[in-house]
Length: 216
Image (cartoon, rainbow, N blue to C red):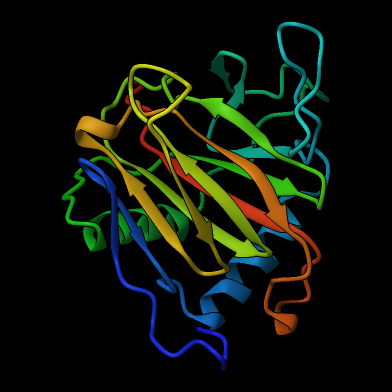
């Protein structure tokens, strides 16, 4: 929902060819449902963890997965870089939410969304420019935001540098990118603390990224 001092509702925006930002797409009630579910899924086993990079560092955003476990740069059925537990299953209702989000952006996706990557950002967390390229399907990526506003940087398919577009993603916002932008570089250079809906009771930002794996 737009702040009281915001005169006009935010409009749907094209971030690139096949990439769409739909503000305030997820209603407040559904945001609460999704956040409550995320809090349960984040508990051990196969819960929220620090992701270690091949160079020996760690990502500042913490993560857990559903359906298949992502690690740099692949997928597994267990948390191979964590507690070794089997990955929690992808709930059918969340998979259907992914398809509904894709439809809202103008895509028709027949395959089920079978992977969720859930990232938690505190005030100091960020995400460097990267591509979602470990899947075998070219189905569009669906990204939902909860809590504090995150600055989303959406770039191009060739380089991590300019040209790119920065857009504020508020709680309930949806971004879908596929087609010519399916492998575009993107990241989160910063989070704006204290900007989330108070009624959500979330200090920080949660991002739910839904993907079609294309794996057998």
